[in-house]
Length: 186
Image (cartoon, rainbow, N blue to C red):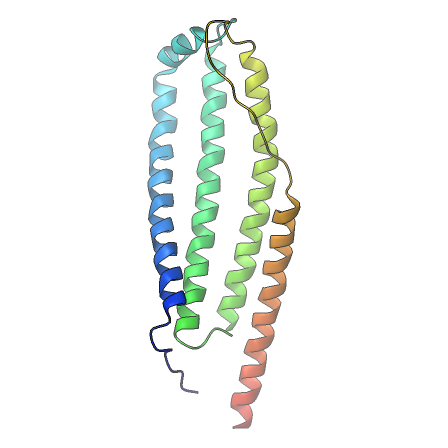
């Protein structure tokens, strides 16, 4: 079966451009976190000294390890988002080529669903971990301006997105089956 390219589809081109731009921002963010984690651990004493200026009870070096752990959570999140962005870009490319209903696109959508599910889990445990860090840090000195709120947990929207992606994967698989049947009858 021959597939024709749609003539200058501005929506597909714009989406592809946004996805490529987002991909490079994520790569940059992942690179920064990859450098930041060992750097913060290498300068544990300096970090704890700076934190002692802000908090009533001076934090110990274990707090720096906890912060580095949160940074690793962030890095994993960025990598999962990057994984999903790459899969979505490939789906957009297949739509532009005129052949979106392929088994590989169903696989890509399922992979995105799993990635979003993992992001939900990381967000939940990351919020618990971040709350533990804030509790460990304790009170802020009265003359210092520092506040941080933790908002995390399982998102109903995220769960719906996981379900949508998995159902869409099934739709794409069925579309590929129907396309195979059609090609077999021609």
